[in-house]
Amino acid sequence: MAFTPRPELRYEKRDRKAYLTLNRPDQMNALNTPLRMALNEAIEEGERDDDVLVFIITGEGGRAFCAGADLKEMTQRDQQGQFGMAVTKDGVADCGKPVIAAIDGFCLAGGLELALRCDIRIATEKSTFGLPEPRRSLLAGYGLHNLSRMIPLGEALHIQLTGTPISSQRAYDIGLIQRRVADRAALMKEADAVADDICLCAPLAVKAIKTIVKTGRNMPVEYSVKMTEPITKLINATQDRLEGPKAFAEKRKPNWKMK
Figure 1 (cartoon, helix red, strand yellow):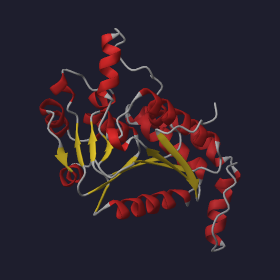
Figure 2: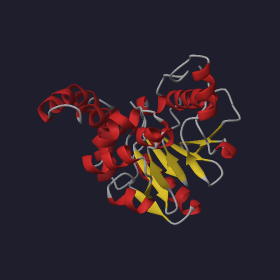
Figure 3: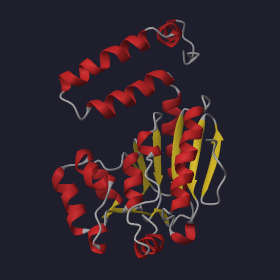
Figure 4: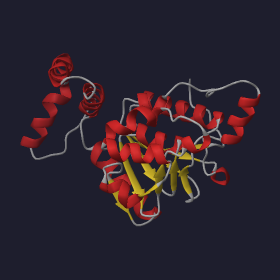
């Protein structure tokens, strides 16, 4: 399915990067059904496009990256007896290409879970992070199972059991975010710089690394090593595998063919 432009999400492509901008600033970019659908479609579009090597997800308005699920929509669905989300596909978490979250402002509940689905998180100094679901008698979804796999257990439980947000400095200190910058201009500059570094790498190797790391981290290391063997064999059989060392020896930039 091709990406259908929607007012809830802007999709822009330049310099081999796809920029996905959550565009509900008056609702603090809360995730409603149309926005969730648009995110999945945009990821599918970029996955099919060989000219896209990395995604950058951000939020419009400067007040919030994303404040979570649209609770007004949730209430309407609750009253109709339709519990749970209308969209269950998880395009961001399942994406084979690298995804960077560029966070400016509130990153809460489903918004933090969206950021957790990304591979690298960069945030402004003013940004805050939290999973306030228990304050609404809700259970988090992705964050409930994955936050404690990404930061120390005690830090994850403090965030989850209290519902209290943490600052960007604290998020950086515990490894929740990988870069912390002054403001929005610096945020997008840093996100571009990280994405540009990714674009220097062989695309097939990058995808293989992401697959191995995200799958292998849930396995004993010897199982992860065994899983990697056929993937390594495939990479070693590509033209790009020969091109990398050859370009280095010839003191030139590699010409990746993705084959």
